[in-house]
Image (cartoon, rainbow, N blue to C red; front, side, top):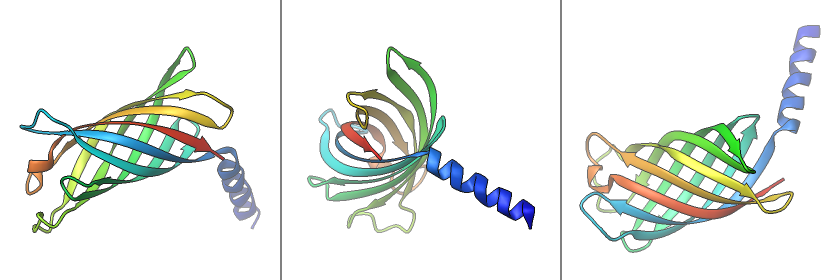
Length: 152
């Protein structure tokens, strides 16, 4: 019984010590074979656990009619002059009427930077490369996103 209480206390303190973030992003996605970016926008919801982070992101690209829902894990690699550099990897689910295949998942890998401008507000910039080995490869490419994040 004592072990359960101690484990519960540690879990509550770990959750209380972590920061919940909500943010907005504007993005430009460079699909393979195209030299012009597809503009998008989205919302993010993240949780920081020390040097690790988990983020859920919903993006919309109106020109290509693609909704992208991502789950991204991050690890804060270093901090330089107040800027936090984070390595990122995750998975994206692509929702588009042109994608008739059942496999609409793609892998994500990249990096991001965050610069605090106030106690609870930070500016962010991310680079993610999206790739799939099968059906949605026509949407593979690079995404650059810039945004702002508020931490609770």
